[in-house]
Amino acid sequence: MLNHYNSNNLKVLITSHYEINEINFSLNDLTSRLKTFTYSKINNPDDDMLIHVLTKLFIEKQFIINSNEIFQFILKTANRSYEDMYYLVKKLDTLSIEKKRQLTIPLIKEIL
Image (cartoon, rainbow, N blue to C red; front, side, top):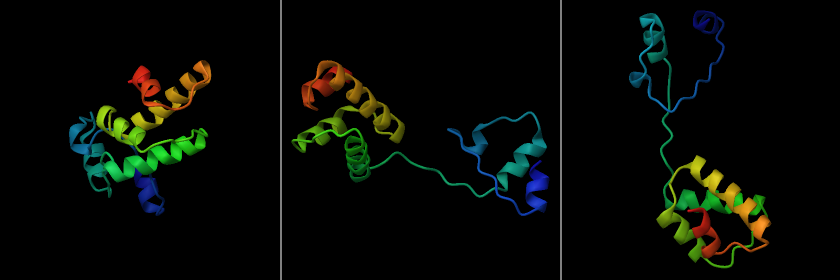
């Protein structure tokens, strides 16, 4: 299949939590072909990116952010990946609706 894509100048997108060298394929030919692909590694976000991601997610959930302390608390205590931020905000949204409470550090502590 990869030969078909290559010969027809088609694009392939493969995502993984692992780098190509960390995967042991049973077909050596597949390993060598995949190593010819261009790849990019997406690192965990820095503080500025996390604040932007959190801001976007909070806006989507219509949270009102009363202070910068909320961001600082999350940066200090939460796992620092895009995926973890998404699930944190999703859990906060559910909990705030259930308890009919605004986004506060005590509410965040209930999740973390």
